Image (cartoon, rainbow over all chains, first blue to last red; front, side):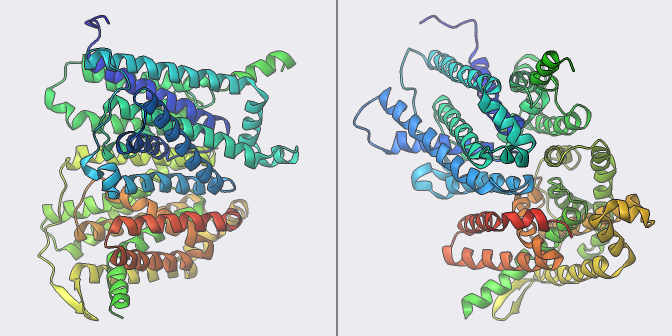
Length: 317
Length: 290
């Protein structure tokens, strides 16, 4: 493998986070942008996937080695996050947004609590090591670079899936369920099943992204299970435009790219700022962004769905 | 018997601020229909205001409660006038409104660190003397917190049920147009609701803060429990919020004593309320308003 001198290790880690958050924002787009389910517990599904993967990979003695053990564990982690999505989806199926806030926030808190208390499985607040890449192509940097390519391929897959949903009858059903559930139901659509399916599949994929993150960092830390990830994903989607597939990508590149890559690596700021000022400022600006965007331009940078434009073109309205 | 008295005494005294915080949150939720996530920061800033006044002017903790209440009330009104009122005038939907309040919460929680500093701060109060209540040692601050909370809860309850503004607030919540046609000024009444809610939240924060430490996450750590109490108890009105708040506090303590681990008690309470909310789901939609 080549020496990778052209890219530094920090940039690989930064890009990995960016791609992962874009993937989560794409999944949130399907939940929030189309079906209008406000998932405030993104970090819960992601974290469940990460810890389920870690526990299965490190604590279980598999009769086969990598990459098979990785594939099996990642698949099971995805499945577990999906089952959690199914349960939470059932809990929120007939609740208003206030109930959804409670159920999803409650779920994320439960994941945090059990990751902290079940020390025998998760390592608790000390964290959990023992994870490794399912391959070895040379140095750590080279392995991480390959892993960046892997998650990029996965997120491109999620992007294509989301775009396909937009263009399919299933997507129209999601939009109908989100914008007027009673009407969709009166037309004979099972909105209950629709919400359950979309919530479970997107939650499962959030879990898969968590598992991939676990491999990248190789050390699971409960500090990752705070609200920060949920905020970052939400800012990415809302800034770009929650109604558009590209919104998740554009918003994440601007918000995360600016703060986690440009500011951290390329702007010469005093070193002591990076420990506290910058992370705190980042969150404060993210919070303010959510408020300002939703007040001034609720549909984000990209604006409303192209579907409307398409319909206007077709019907001349 | 020991277990029951311990659960009752510790539960009531330790979780008293939760009841107060829930009342303030419920006022905004039930009278304006808004879930205000940033209420968590009203609680946090109440603790910071109290700590700042207490340590800067070297005032007695109980004296600081008055300016703390006023400052928290004003902060609460300011968030209404600057954020939520403009948002409502722009016809922002309920879902977006919650995300706006979530964003405001995140903003305040971090921005306050640039004003009050990053490290955890403490009230400057004399070390509390434990008082014996039914054989359980209770910290004086917690005991006085309980008494104050009960008094305040009573005052707020009477304010909503018996006063002119309380009646107008309820009228506004039931039918805004009719209330306006009857000469009720929505801006004044709504501002009063936010002010009173801010007082409740700020004082809850001050009691939380004096009981342990003042940190940016103080209010956010309590937010989920406030939300649980208000969404589940709110269907029975303000009295329901108070009753469920007290019950949740006692249950939390009883479970913490049983499991020997506070986090398990919290987890059990969260799961119980998540299921309870599902069970009451349909009625929540219809019964959310006054």
